[in-house]
Length: 487
Image (cartoon, rainbow, N blue to C red; front, side, top):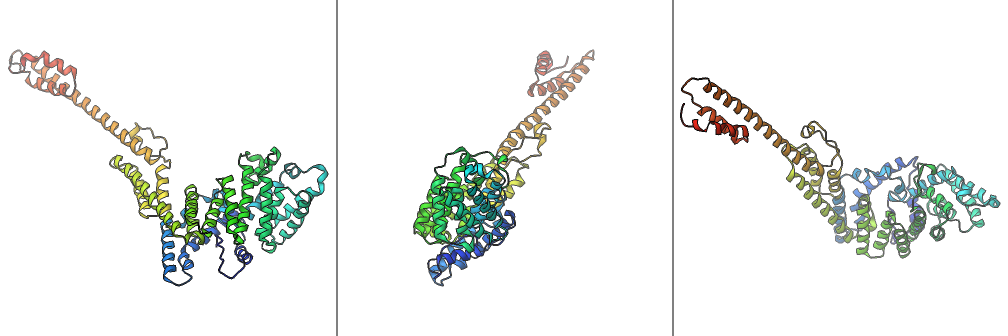
């Protein structure tokens, strides 16, 4: 399963439950394979949510399972939508997709750290060669444990020796916490909690500029070197927040929900962009019986990142709560209503045979699925920039990339202008034809010695004048005396 849910009634110890959760983790050769695997895991969890929640056969459980299944159906019709853009979100994958990926991503960060001057970044004095050695050896074993899990033991041994030489090194403390929390053979939840608490304590007060460079590696992108990254103001907050967050996971896995709530809240306050801390906070609130607050917190996280709607309906802590179910249904209803309203506005101003018609039909089909993610996809479709073919409206010029909501009114205006220009051209052509016929009729009469009749010419001039020809009006005045009789 992708989400860990502590079960106080299983008769199994917290350590055993967490250990089983860790053992379910497959080996990932890279993050992309992890994404594919976890996508399938979420798919299975959503499909089986009813069976999970109705494990005790009674009417109340059946109703609850049905409500949870309805909430899941209100969120997504195809799970692929929930993961459409996640492949590029490497900084979020470590916890957002699966807590167990925390160690996978962190091992990559340590690989990046080892490419730099470790002694300089961690501010290790020249006299502390021994400490530098233990850190570098510990980090190498920590990184290589991605291939051989037994190397976590060697990593812990070296990092523990480095800790004895400097007890406030939050980088070392954090990695020891990771080992105690995520290495199955080294599992010790209380030790993990303690080390993450200490790492957060020392990291949150960091202000040294050199230390900030280390933060940038350990909080930045996993696929680029330090030279290729810009230092972000939130780099220090990120590792401090992650230490609080990981401590919260350790507490949650022990069934210490109040502590998990306090620590995840700290992480979320420190760095509101750390949405997984908000998700853990929602889980802890639900586990402590604060269902209304859990729903409110989960809603804020989902509105910041839609993927969490998928994660919420696949999470036993949250999907089982009626307030959360109602929140998801309301999110769905609001998103569907917004999409319908904005599509309707486009339809109202759209010209006949508009180039946008087919696209709007596709977006309307999404909305008709009546799910949260489909409605959001439709809203995305309305704001997505597109290239349009309607160059004839712009006198042969293709318009700049426009969203549908920008293009439809522009197309309407340009179409009206185009019609007006066509009408003006037609009037000019009609005037020219009428004037030519009138001139010809007048010339024919002028060529006669007697019996001249200008009435046909005058009628033609009057028609041209009605179309705005000043020359025709002048001709009518000139021939006014011959309007009703021959000469």
